[in-house]
Image (cartoon, rainbow, N blue to C red):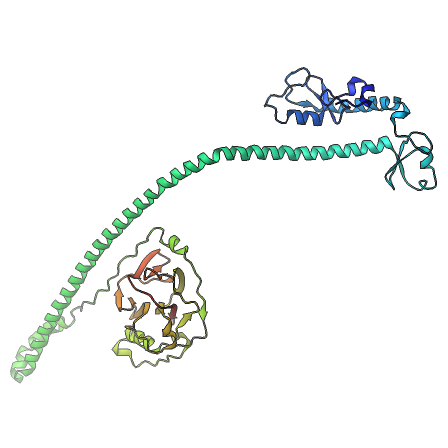
Length: 450
C-alpha cells in the first residue's frame, strides 16, 4: 500500500505492484519496471509462461541492461525528489531545529551539521545519511539475492521430493512385484543346480566305484599269480638236486614274472562342487574367534593317534615330542550355547591339521581320542605324499580333494548341525547332522608343521 510520502513522488519511480518506490528495480521485456523482489514473489508460483502484471504481455526474461539503467535513473530521480520534500517530512534535530543529514559511525546515530561539529562528535567519522543508507540498502539487496537463490534451490528440492513422493508408492508396489518374481527364479536355479549336482555326484561315484572294482580285481589277479609263482618255487626247492637243475630253464620265465607291475591302491577323490550363495548366507552369521592362551591342554593321545595315521607301523620309532609348540592344539576363547555362528580358520598349506568344536569339559582333560564322544572335528592327515580327510564321532573318511587356505566352520546349535566349508571353492566338505547339543561348545584348532 502506498505511503504518504510516496504520494508526492513521480509515477516513474513507483512500483505498480507494491505501490512504493522501487527496491532493486528491474525492467522486463515489455518495458514496464517493477521491484525485483516483487517480481520474484509474484512469479514464484506462476506457470512456465510468465506475464507482465500491467499489460499481461509474455515476459520470460528480464533485461539486465535495462535494469541497470533503471537503477541509475531512479536513484537520480529519487534523490531530486527527496531533496524537494519539505523539512517536516524529514527527521528534525530537536536541539537545532534543522534536518539531520549525517550518520555517526561511532554511536550509530543521526546528526545535524551543528551536532556533528560539537565536541561530543567532532572526533568521530561522519557520513552522509543518503550514502550510508544506499550502502546499507545494497547490503540488504545482496542478502535478499542470496536468500532468494537459496529459496529457489529449496523450491527445486521441494519439487524434486514432491515428484519422488508422488512416485514412491507406485515404485514400491512395482519393486515388490519385481522382487517377488525373482525369488522363484533363484529357487528354480538352485533346484536345477542341486539336481545337476546330485546327478553328477551319482555318475562320478559310479565311475570311481567301477575303477575301484577293477583295481581290486587286478590286485586279486596279481595276488593269485604271485601265489602260483610262490608255490612253484616252493615245489622246486623240495625237488632233488638233479631234478631241480633240470627245471632251471623256467628260471627266465619266473624272473620276468618277478618284474611284474604290482597295482597300487586307488586313492578315490570326488570333485568339489560350488554351492551358489552358500558363503553369502553363512557370512550373515559371521563371528571372529580369538584364542585362549591360558588353556594348556596338549591332547597327547589325540595327536599320537594322528601320528599313527601319518606314519603307519613302519615309522613309529621316529622321535616325537608332544610338548613342542607345533604339537600343541589351541582352544577358542568363546563358547557357544545357542544360535548360529560361522567363522573361518586359515590352515594355509599345512599338511596335517584338525579343526572343529568340542564339548567344553574337554579343555580340562588330556585323554581325547579319535573315537571320543562330544568331539566334532575335521582332520587332514598326510601319508606318503597323499592326503586324507576324516571326521570324528564317529571316525569316518571323506574322499574329497584336500582343502587349502581358509576352512569355514558353521554351527547351528538348535538344529544340532556343524558344517565344514572349503572357502576357496565355496563347496561343502562335510556335515555333522541331527546332533543334540545340551552343553557348551568351544572351537578347537591344531595345525601341524608345514
